[in-house]
Length: 533
Image 1 (spheres, rainbow, N blue to C red):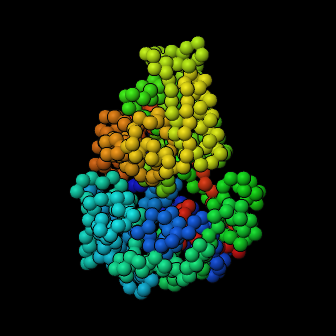
Image 2: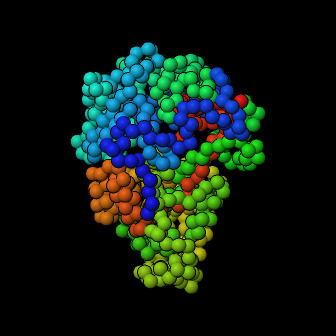
Image 3: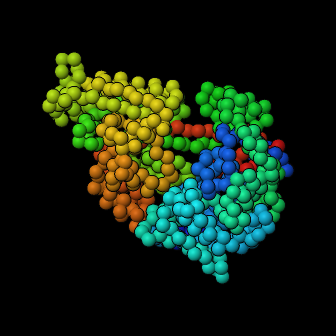
């Protein structure tokens, strides 16, 4: 089981790590050999209007997208290697219950004030205080976390009472506001009060948001500064929710970057534009293990996986734009990169699937339908059915499982409907198989979904009882670095081996660029944006 991870952080403190796909902050040719453009405008497609721009108060994905232009983070994590490098923090350390960061000297806020370690500590404590209503409490800042500052050494220390897995990465992903943004959280709803490469200069709600480059910026990942060749002077996030419109504007040069999916991708691919790939979980299969449900039987779960060709299912579900998943953790940058699937789930073999059920006492009648002790093998699949490929994939699984001898009822709907079925606690027996994505870059996020109380008291929607998983989680929660990732990989493998969770498909979203690109990473971080002639 191969994994990649962030390095042992105490050993990495103070070490400037090389970032893959980076140019060391210097001039380099862009896609097609174009030279860096000077003081240009980088225009990209925004899928939804963010409303308020304060990045620690809003849970909007659009707000998060724009915040990467105007706000910085304590550390940068490479999405391909999971390695950690400096950003606002120049060095760091971690234990299971603490993380400390030494803040760079000379970081300047948009209002001209100097970013201090106390300001960073105040950000963390603001989010941790439930009275403030931050949407990042419990995620970027774990519940119960507290931060203190040592101005003399420019160091902040974050502590938790109990071990907090990936504390350094969680805190490191918190966008940092300057003092003015903390004193009046509404002040940053229409402007930026951070330390980012760009500052908001125009807000045209439901149309576009304009950002201008800040001179004197010199603390970006990969030593990026405001003088780095190719860094745009202006960035415009233009609301372009229609994919065909975004495609036309990208091909014409009106847009420099846009995510393109569906049939329009064919036109973009023909233009040979540069792109980056962002994997996202698209197929995660969960089973209800309440005793009265047939999927509480391990043999039924095993046979269901044996009976369906997951390679075909992946291609149908993603409309040919996906790959087989290797773990539940697919959102980048991932804390750990490992494979919990290979060797842990059975291969596609319908004959073997029928034999599995035969051996477990699920016998087929004259009509081919199976039952055990007079109870028919009736299965209810609930799934996010908001597009044609997902509906087609559900029908493909229904056909395969019907051939196995089950009667399969499909219930599709949007994610809110499916979440209501499996997590509301209204009737925890109301489903047998669920396809719904739990999006996270941290393996620790999944713990509540596979242990502890069931809905409505908790999140353990599959009523999973897996002592081996829980023991591995306990071990992993007390570790950092490579040992932690190994333990989390072991924990997730306990879920796949028992067919409690089967990640089978990742979609691959492509962001295309026209005379533009990213100098590092896969997100629109301000210091990463580049324009080319």
